[in-house]
Image 1 (spheres, rainbow over the protein chains, first blue to last red):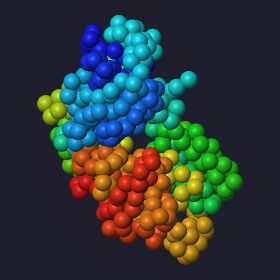
Image 2: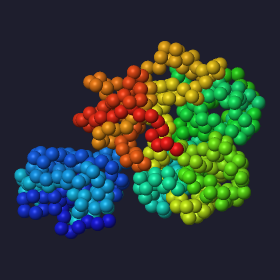
Image 3: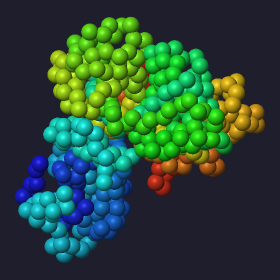
Image 4: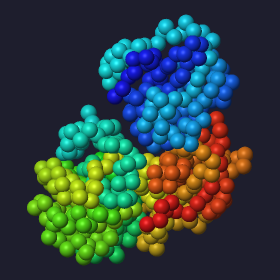
Length: 128
Length: 364
């Protein structure tokens, strides 16, 4: 299971890649593994304002429906438009092709509350 | 404390993801639901179904007792034959759906749903005590059997490598007592996947031996262990009812599409009067199969709409691994049950298009 060092992580199993004031968000390798086969993805429209800790989308596996939570607050400036047609990409490439949305930060200080790769791995070991 | 089948450790060693199901600690998947589902449709799969219950009925009055207890006509059975049936309450709701094995005129075995075993046995005892059946003995023999289901087009060829029994002479819904991997086994040509295959009953002490022997014998054909996740998607593609979803004390067999096992011409069975009344008055709602006409995954308990009106409820739903579309079963008002009726499924805040279609969803 992979946990790239350059990413930040949430307790809801999202990852965040920071590039200046825009972050890319997806779900972690651990999350996709727990979900199993992803068969449906629901993303917000570009322009939607999201709030840290609130659901912004839905990922469905064969067996379960899971909300995906915004790690930070801001405006959705881009979505992965290929994902709804190929939801299994979340299983095969959770950190790259399976990215979900890009958020323009409205409160950059929120990033400080996120975990680094080591802290996240410890977190899931304790949780599991 | 969750109950464990004799193969619990084996599942864990195979890396299965374990879940609670009906009070049992069971494998939901090994490699992935879709892959396992397609393995059963394309080759063969092996399921641990040892959690299912077995209840034995013995004695000269066995048939008379079973006729009162169940809704199908057990008098049509011959030795070595199996019948799909159900047990109803007097008001017509379902206690459980069952398979009934006839060994002899005075010896039958029920296979019942795992989570219902204790409830079923208590109900059966009650019926026995309140009726006039002095010469019938009931035994809950669930602890005496491990059960495996070998399902898929390659199942007969795989099983043939481990038994001298001529499998070609075991017809669908019949069974034979023979040896599998040297273990005395009830070999039953049944299953709940829509594929050809067998359900095997034998002593729990032999479970690991038979499991391993089957996986080894089936390796050239791609035989894979299959979890409950794929068992659910497989049965759903065939519109097979699952207790707690399509069947319950609140749903009659006529509503659930089990009119074909409800033998209203048979006198005196428990629930008959209520079911007859329901049939004469018109069954108010029906179980239908539907497929999504827009993107979305239907799930149990989602509301079903026709126009602006709520007309029913999804009982089971999934993204079909075989067809790659959302499909499901729903109990809807009878007026909305015709093939082709447009429906909408309430998925979270949206109403998503669907239509009633013919079942089974997957033609076998």
